Image 1: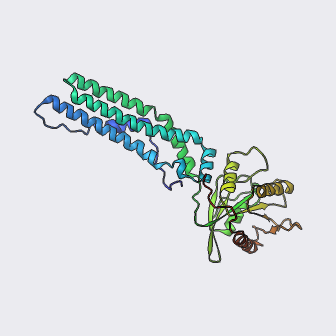
Image 2 (image 1 turned 180 degrees about the horizontal axis):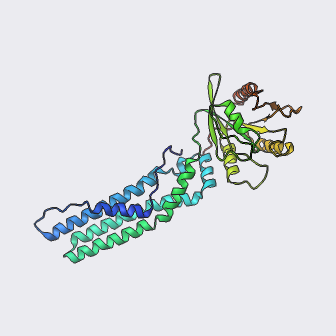
Image 3 (image 1 turned 45 degrees about the horizontal axis):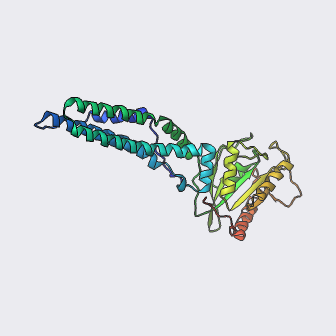
Length: 327
């Protein structure tokens, strides 16, 4: 599962500056031998730099979800919004960097302890500083990628594993956002132009003694090559949801022919999903089909739809359609 809070990602320059800043805080200690004193101070500086960098990298690595932590929906969305393989590679790079920094610090400290004079101590210390900076700088691409991935992960909706999930799907501008505003406490952006919904909106709906999560997914077009927004919607439909409400606009005010809208609903049924078809805008156009009829503008048919949705979910009893399928 994607955590609610994902840590911010610093760049390599910030980690290096933070690490070297800590070096200045190392205090001189009294030792009778100046050589031993120099060794002690140098070792403290190296250890502090190692700890600072490992903490920064570890905070990012530990704070980002790993593939095994994600369900199939979250994983699909991750691959859609960012390069999933690059995501995994970037996290592995951070883990590698932490290991290399430890190895570098250990070898440098070992050399300083055996150093016969100040020149050798300075050489080991300078070598550590240079190689340390190179390792961190090599992580800049991975850190930059994870910074972008963080923004993508924040857009993945947090959905419950305990409640039933209803997905409202259909062509753009058929009234999906209007319907979810009628069914739940959610007030999404509603406009008379297509693709108003850019991401998945999640609302809560109470019917009787049960509470359901209702997802308003971005509009779909009946085509083979889907854009990113549509692919996210399809990932939700294919991976989660106990019921898909496929909305149609028989008035065709949405800009799409009714036959094309019907094909989309039929294709969702073809995926083996539990689908009910709802015709909106009956205050403008009403067909003689057997589909459920509603008007989000007047509220007509909304209560009947809610009853039908609840009956459908209870009768279905989730036949082979778990809320979260783990790959």
